[in-house]
Length: 254
Image (cartoon, rainbow, N blue to C red):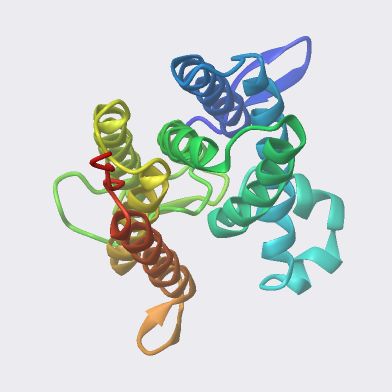
């Protein structure tokens, strides 16, 4: 593993943060492309991505505080700025709040923003999981004797056991989701439906991967991420139901 990619003037360039930045840059390209295609000012993409970065960062860390209070109180600075231990669900919620506020401030339709957000999230997660794999930050799975099992001896959270490389599983799943959503973006469908599909597909993907990850069971034989995944999946189903219930719009005969 390569938690540190290289050093510049004594400053370590960490794999995790390098891929976080790459993910946001890729999301910016996608956001600008979609804004332009929908006849909005593509420069607004900078606002949306900046707000998503700030909200996602705060949400992912603050959300974790409630589940790792002891680690937070021991060393708050290291806890908040470490390259491990991020909570995707908290990042999604935090980013959603700040992006909605930014969209309202610049006058963008929320349905359009929902669609492009789904695309940006999917590509961002794809690249972000590469960083988790390179860093070996503890997101890997349980022990396995499958041929593609691997160890993370030099990871941020090292292990000599051969384990499921769950960051790779998730990276492939999110890439497939991004490609599926990208293929649909200009086809006939209710505006905003890409977000509903994203919530369902990522919820199912994360729910499935959790069966071979190391997270503890908390209730009903499920891990906390699985419970949140079920919640996001249900939100996606409800959103799609509401959107498709009145689509396509009725055309008057007059």
